[in-house]
Each structure stands twice: as C-alpha cells, then as structure tokens.
Image (tube, rainbow, N blue to C red; front, side, top):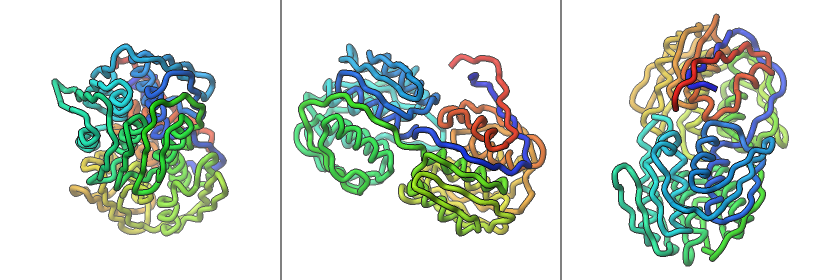
Length: 426
C-alpha cells in the first residue's frame, strides 16, 4: 500500500449481505505494549493488519522485541530491552506510542519517549499521563521533544483524572501492575478496550479490580508472565459498516461484533427510523426509504463515540430534517465537513457544533481528501450514497484503522476500487 493510494467509489448501490469485523485496533495497541512488562512468548489472536499495528511492531522491534505474524495471530517474543528510548521517527506516526512510557518506566525505572503524533484532530495533551506518573514517584521532564521519566520504583497512589482519559487510564494501568503498593484510578475511562487490557494483564498475573467502572484498583506485583489473548472485536468498524448499510438503503448484517458496545449508535439509528436487529454477536440494519434527522453529542463511553461522529454526520446529510452534532471530545474534529460540502452537503460548522440540514439525494460524487482516520471513512460512506463517482485521496489515514475496508464493502455489493499511487517515503 502506498501513501498516495486512492479509493474510487461509484455510488447508488444499496448494500446487502453479511460482513465480519476484525479485531479492535484500540484494544490491540495497549495489549502489544503490555509485552514490555515481562519477557517470554505471547500470542495475540484476532489482531487487525493495520498501519498503526505495523508502527507498534516497529517500535517494539526497536526496543528488542521479536514480532511474527501467524495468520490473524501476532506472536511476540519479548526480551529484556537494551535501551528504553522510543525515537521520534517511529512515534511521530501514531498517538498510541506514548503507551510504552508506563511499562518502560515501571520495569526499568527509565523511559525516553518522543512526544507522539497521529491524526491532527486536536491537541490531546499527555499532561494527565505525566501528572499521574509524578504522583507515583517519577521524575518527569520534557527535553527536546521527548518525555524523559525516571523512578527507582514506582509506588502506588490515589489518582483522580480531571477528565476521563483512555490513554491515561491504560498507561497508568500498565505501569501500576509493577508498582510498589496499590494504585487507585478515579474517574477512569470505561471503554471496552480498558476491560480487554485488564483481562490480559490479569492473565499475566496482575491484580486489577473495577475495570469498566469509574474506579479501578491495581495492586502491584513483583513479576508478570506472558500469556495468550484474543483481541475483542472492533466496535468502531462495526458501527462504520452498519452506517454503510444504512446510508445506501441496504440490508447489512455485521457479524463478530459485540452489540452492546455500539448501543449508543444503534439507539440513535432506531430513533432516526432504522430497524435494527441484534443477536449475541451480530447486528443488522434493514432497508429504510427515508430517515429522520436526530441530534447527537459525543461523550466518553458509554456515550456516543467521537470515532463514529464523522460517519454519523455523513448519514445525516441525507436525512429528513436538521441534525445538530456536538463534538465534546476533540476540538478539531470537523475537518471532514468541508469535504462533505464539496459533495453537496448542507453543513454549517461552528467551533464544536455542526448543523446538518439533511435532504435525501443531495450528495454528488467529487474529488475529496481524507484529513484523518474517521473522516476518511465518512467520505467513503458518503461516496456509497452519492450520485456518480467519488475519489477519496490520502487514504493512508483509512489504513491506520481499517483493514481493507473497500474489500469488505465490495463483498456487500459496493462498487469500490483502490487505485495504487506512487510509493512515498514515510
């Protein structure tokens, strides 16, 4: 895959059939960083093949860890790190790279990690991570674009996050497993990926209670061990595929998902007029000739996920009525608005609110540019419902979080094609 690949979408075909989600990117990434806590052989199953997974593997290899793919399983051969530096050239590609800070600091007493990169959707400061580690006894400074942290041994502490932070909760959980004493995280993130990380760490010998609630307690241990673990299904991919069916007036069943993880989306879709059926591990959206506009406001789990806001906005462009979409997680996550407007959508963006005046049949194919991971998905979805041909460029964003999305859509009858571009240096 080249950084200059494009996806061409010919709209107007209602999707139909069954499709399966892969493993959750946002669960797999912290799980892979957990391997820095103990030497030995790990096996993670249901791991998606994504750019962010590749970037994580590259960073782990830089730290001395062996990585080997075996089908959808990723085998990790963890060994003691000769150094504890995470360089800019790797970390700049992905926000989640900061999750190596906690494990390195907890196990080796030292870490030097470049300030992270990723999608330009907001500042997403890591001050909450740093303040937490300082309360656990670490000396942390920012030097030349790097976070440099030292601690003879982290100690347990009672931490109260000002804002619920998924990355901060994960980083502290990872570090606290080897800290001396008990760590209590208050106002902890409740996302399913937090629970998945806790389940894996418990298999490794950690003592964790309360994952999935607002208070998580971690009792530090002296040593952990490797484990085998299956990554949970990707709830954001499941929601994206469900909206793909809905926006085309199709009949799509999404298998290998956890319906409860996308309740916030399916409830809103039902209020819009869609019929949603669910089973133990599947969700189905049935054809809808027209749907009503409905407001949403993004919020931490179990609220409406910010990672589905752009896709839902694409759906609202074709609704009957006006929807007010409020983004409360990131301050710069409306960059897809102007691209949807290029396709004929009537959207008025404000600082954290977008007013979408929906109208059936309003979208027309156009050349558009992906600005971030979820924005790229919204443009593909809009293209599925638009008249004519839509060309989405800069889809390397899409490849960070979706494994060959265009092929899954093809299996549902979509007319999508990836067109390769010239190779470009990373």
